[in-house]
Length: 271
Image 1 (tube, rainbow, N blue to C red):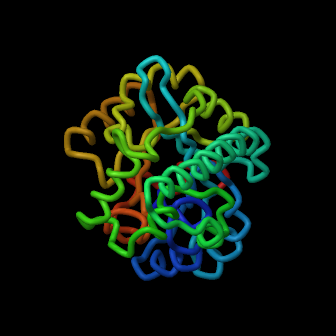
Image 2 (tube, rainbow, N blue to C red; image 1 turned 30 degrees about the vertical axis):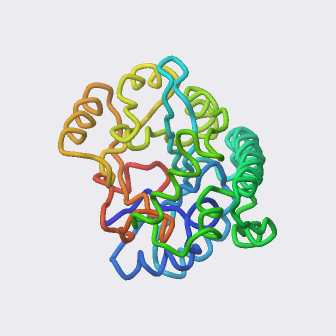
Image 3 (cartoon, rainbow, N blue to C red; image 1 turned 135 degrees about the horizontal axis):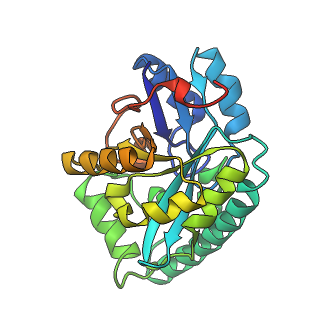
């Protein structure tokens, strides 16, 4: 059964509405989907209602922005099939979202000071229904160039990387705490795209916090990454997941369902 367990919507840093993503999923034959919007569970009520209308099984999902403080690396933790009330996940992620939003407002001021014209109100409206502004929303106001174009990427690097006026990032939560929160809400905690962020060394430590899975199929993963993931999954008894990491116009060119999860849907409890 075709399952894309890694898609994003306009509830975080995706460009498309939930309905638009589901239409794409339906067209590509996806039967199971999980919206893993960054640090928010706000979209779940809409996802739950709309997905059934498309004949698609929706699994509660989230992607938590975390950090490996021992190795000084970002780590993304996916959470699946948790209790939708998310009593432990939500407060943890609300703090992250507040930090990100404040940082984005600071970035907007720095970019304006560097000579660029930006309309804060227009950005806030454009970001809705997300209550958090992301860099993608800022870039949308600065250029009509496509994400994958050299024009877009050069401007992005000029502003947000190195010595750019809006460079820098927020302080993320400990990856161990993210895993624990997902477990506390009866969910499956999964390391997202470990090849992209080089999260492999952290796996044994996350196991102690309750890690249950590892993402194998992802656009940024190579054949070598697949082998590493499979070896770790076998060694630690981890569930393998996967998906497109779809962001619409705010991400690399790919369509919903182009990359799917290697596991059967019944690997998730209560489905």
